[in-house]
Image (cartoon, rainbow, N blue to C red; front, side, top):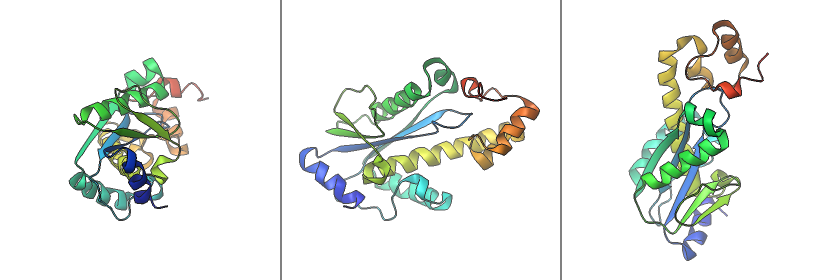
Length: 197
């Protein structure tokens, strides 16, 4: 079954689908991002797949195609301070909830990537590997990933010593080396750095 066919099956019972995914749960720095997307019925977007399987160039190109094709979309975040306060899982759920609410649209079902659902008013189901299963979720994964990568490029200009443009905040050898040299920045998630020696 293709990603589009999966959505067609869901639409038989729930005509208006919101695809939801997050980006940035793993990195040591920066906000966590989420996107919610409603694609019109019959909309097939060539090349839409799990954002992790696509090149950066392909994701960037698809970002514009998706935002133009979507009936509605919203990209939302939870901040580093919120991640520290409520933990990364809850912060990711909060970002998803904000993205869904930010659509300002009625919907029949929200397909949430992963194995948990945010607390929203409306029907939500978790879809494990949703970004490789549903076109709507895959579209959301691309919007969240591209938006977060662009945000990390902005942080790279602010804090050039950490190499955010290269690793997007993930715990690479380069990133750990910079942390050892310069210590953490205001955008680092301190709870993620406890494991550092």
